[in-house]
Image: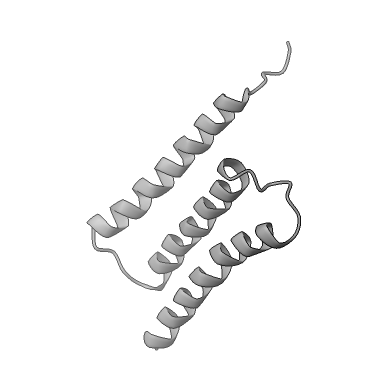
Length: 92
């Protein structure tokens, strides 16, 4: 049996479905008004995952080296990190 090949559009459709699922999960957190250290961590983790997927697949920076990739990765890493640190410091 031959291995199934994903076309470019099929791959992007699967990634889009994952992005929608992550967005719905964070929307449900807001809908049910959940809070707490782990919930904030979960939401910020989904922000990181979604940002990484958008940078790699939709912006096409997966194989780019240098400033632009580092700038985008820094944005999805540092900003949620600052938010989470602030949340931890204020909840003590």
